[in-house]
Length: 204
Image 1 (cartoon, rainbow, N blue to C red):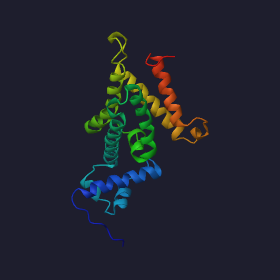
Image 2 (spheres, rainbow, N blue to C red; image 1 turned 90 degrees about the vertical axis):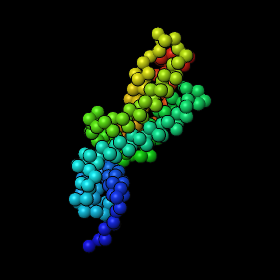
Image 3 (cartoon, one colour; image 1 turned 135 degrees about the horizontal axis):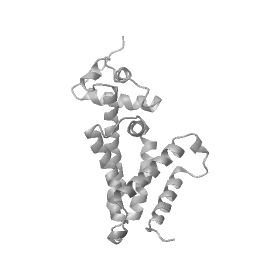
Image 4 (tube, rainbow, N blue to C red; image 1 turned 180 degrees about the vertical axis):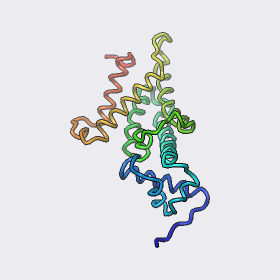
């Protein structure tokens, strides 16, 4: 019988989250069970229930941590809008792409697991923190516009978020996207610039 690790208080929760992330990367967010996460952590099948009520509960915690890490990454990339709001906002789109490539287990839990963000207050707060950086970036980008000409910051943030997500799903994570002669980075950067030109931020 394999030797099971002994976890002190707090360590088991971390081990289960890490195990779930590994399993998601291997077979997707719909294919793992609490028992498999327990096996990864080297504990009994009943042990996870000390921390998580269900598989969905564990999945939501993985997603929450993903959003927290994603927000931290975006905040660092934005760097208070330096050297200018336009360049900083363009970087944010690419940080979405980088996160999906570097942290696929967390990304899938956040966006491909089917969990409801709005039904979990902690998950909702973490998700709002990440898109909140895009909202702030949009506000600063249009701050020099006359008030009546400024588009709603949340709308701009949502559009760039959706564009980034589309490039990730269609061109960065799909086999079909590998055939594109344009890299996901270039496609996203050009898409954001075209969008912002349409809003009058960039001249022709």
